[in-house]
Image (cartoon, rainbow, N blue to C red; front, side, top):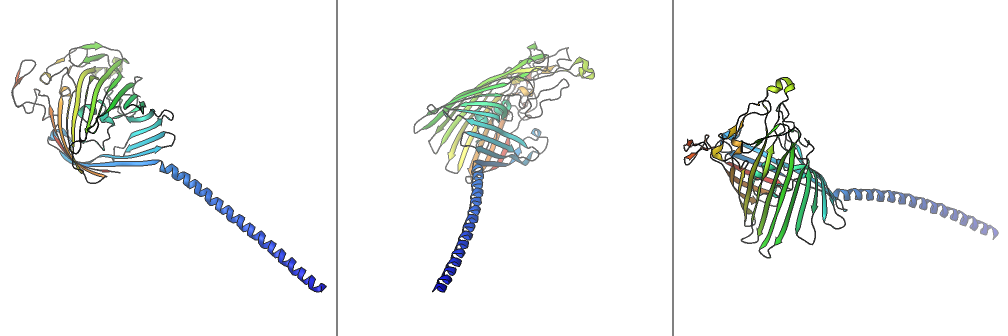
Length: 458
């Protein structure tokens, strides 16, 4: 009996030890599996955080491929008609949950790569009313800020292209958008001089490189718009904007737009460039959708001259150019009509008079001479003073949500002058000389142009 008890005790002990070893092995395996699971969870958590960051990045862009035909070969130094890529844009926008947004938009045209937009935007977290922009972005003007991918005519109006070349500038902007009132206010400060020609004492442009601030003067721009609901009819937006800028004089004289008034100025003094504009946009829910919008601007523009330095040897023989200040006026008027769900017709009349002090009949007549050839060369009115009017017609077909096909024809006309071209009637110059019909500049400077464009947008 004792032997049997001893044998049973032995087997129970062995079994207990075996179970204990198995339990320890299972525990170790469970611990190992748990460590692996925790590692996977940590990796998944990291990947999820990275995916959340990527989800905040929005990528968009568009390509505009086109064919153009110019009716006058004299407009181009190359071909009279050709295919081209007008715009190749790719836009990256990163927006965080705390009201911060970053935007980068390059233009990827071959041989003409440039950064169109590069700015950070900080939204007001508390009142949800203010936004601060810092970097390179659009100037505060309706047609400038209206995207090229949505615009109803192929290019902006002439007055806008002239006053705001390149549309963008580097600086800072504060926007005010109260939630309780349909008003929108913008105040911006820019380096200025974007796209201007600034010559040194040898007549070489020192402002040819983008994003260089030539002087200490800054440009101030302000814009305010108000939205007026019109019930079931539609809505009306109206407002105004102002530009208050200056450039540094690099000449010793300033010539006025009438070519008779000249004043002394010092190197480094201000040459003012100021103008005001009024705008409206009427949107009507009638006949399938209709909109009428326009803008008018007027003020004083300026170009910067140069005066050679006498001590520079041969450079002193170079005739200098005076600064030139001229009054101008211009504007545009759109009529846009939807034609069903897939088509749209657009008409635009735009006009720009770069020098309201000179009429077409006075071109090549009014001028002045001076014996001070070092600081100021003789200058006379020319084609740069001519007013230009353009009638634009465009038909859009929306192939789908991403493809738009546009056919656009623009008729360009200039003021009549006493140079080669086509006139329909005789007229008399400012100096009393009669000019026979058959003489006009409108066939020599700009010409009518046809554009067929396909835009792919995503």
